[in-house]
Structure formats: C-alpha cells, structure tokens
Image (cartoon, rainbow, N blue to C red):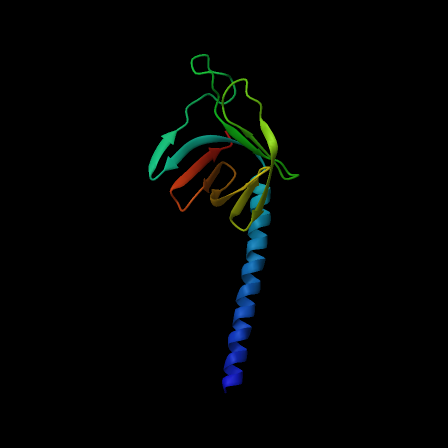
Length: 140
C-alpha cells in the first residue's frame, strides 16, 4: 500500500511538472511573438503612485528637448532602448529573452529581470519588483 501511494504521488508530481513546463514554453512563445515591435512609455508606477509620461511620441519638444521614451524588441533577440532625450543615441547593446512570464534584459554587466503582467496588441505592463514598480507601454 505504501509503495502504491508513493508511486501515485511521484506520478502526480511528474505530470504536474511536465504540464507546467509545457505551459510556460507555450506562453513564452506567444509572448515572444506579441512583444515584437516598438513600445512607448505611457506611465511609471512606484509604490502605487502613477506618473504619466506626456512627451510627444516622435518629434522633439522645443520646450523640454524630450520625446516619449521607447523600447524595441526585435525578432533576433535585440533590445533597443531610447531614454527620451533628443540627441541621445538609441542604446542597442542589449538582448532580451522570455521564459514564461519572465522577461530578461541582458546588458554587458548585468541582467534585469522583469515580470510581464499584461501583454496584448496594444499594451505591455511589466513589473520591476514585487508589484511596486510597474512600467506601462503602448504601441501607439
């Protein structure tokens, strides 16, 4: 009886582990396709306080010398980042990968781990840490 119970428990653990791994792989593949393209920063929320980003999308504002910051995910794994200050170069020495809901941005000396909270054709929301630092992007 003990052997049968142990065997059943082991079998259940294996089945659950396999399905979770397969689900993460499928979800990761779907997210990898949906995330491709250019995303403009819409808002930054830190500890519940949301700040809307109101700079123009592409034309430099004469008053502030800024445009709306954006990021780009390319199919080859390249990750581009523009901080929004006119005249600055787009940072293009980064790569990204997706595993389940984990989005990893790899720089030369570090890896930034983000959790994908929401991703559809129009909106991307990522969490930089424990639900306290959310970044919201739009394709516009």
